Image 1 (tube, rainbow, N blue to C red):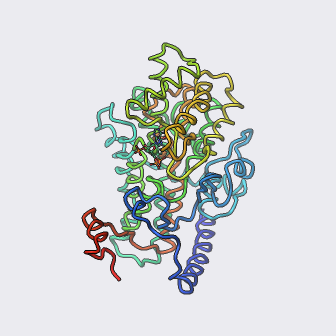
Image 2 (cartoon, rainbow, N blue to C red):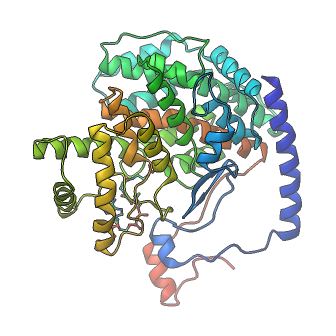
Length: 441
Ligand code: CMX
């Protein structure tokens, strides 16, 4: 796969030179102003980093290298007989900014299949954990155990020129992506299928092999995996998993360490874990109502109860988006095509009609619309994957494509250690009283 690496290097050299010129000519230009409320309220709206692979628009949603999800569904290569994009193609696009050919994607599939080599100590490490350990914890432990393979860490210890960092970060990222389906599937088989591991099939594409490793052989689930792994991959740089991976990478921690850190962020219920929370919440609602086909009125009452209990409605709201998440819409389209009569899917659609006006009525929720996590679980339940605690691992495998591609860019552009300034509340009070200057001149 030297071709891809060379293409990346060519693009990275170009952009690095361009950025150098831009900074020389315009480095003192200002982008926005920081308000006190932003400092206290999660830094919303502060532009503070460069992240090359994707960009989020509050109303239009995610664009991967400028392409919307429907555009990518049209333009990216597909498996023979399939209609969803192959995640390999999305990775190629994120890394190079160019749409791949079918041959490029086939080559990448083969390269990842070749790199999929997991040393036995990774399985032994996972086997040392209690089987009931949350799948995200097991997944992160598996990734950490694989860190022994890091070429970047080894080369850094030997002493390398900083111009070569990107090359080893590239190799580690490719190796890690190649191994993730097998580690993730091992966690699933270990926790839910009595430890019966399935061997990889190197002739399958990355998404199809993941479906096979999990133990789901039908074409429907395989197509779902290809779509799922494509649309969850990247959401610009500020979300918790991407930002964490990016931040840890800025300390020159290797891709295994960075990605594991990002996954610990994805495992939070306000971020990726929301996908398990959605299905858990629906199962609980069904149980409390004694029905798997609740009416809109029953759903509305259950939503109000959730809010009255001081909880959030999982799968709704977003820190940046202000409209229905196009990743939700892509999954809705998939459901309309493959399972329009599924009861769980129909409940998700009824929730979509019911929740936004209730959240709007609270007067404080900035985005009452569904996000990516509101729909994904229902599709998985349809194909028989009901173990909702596992869902965030699927999200994590996909997220690797975006955050690791972005990490390669960060090292190729020589981005420095990330270290924003913080203040204390006492500082702020004194500054407001005119007593102390927080920021230097
Ligand atoms: N249910 C109930 N209340 C909600 C809400 C929801 N779905 N979304 C926002 N709110 C509340 C917030 O908790 C906040 O309340 P307080 O002022 O009492 O603290 C208020 O509305 C304002 O919040 P906001 O500015 O609209 O939203 P934030 O940027 O602070 O938070 C998010 C964004 C995603 C954490 C929030 O919408 C939420 O908790 N959603 C449910 C969890 C979820 O689905 N997360 C997944 C997001 C996608 C992903 O990362 O995978």
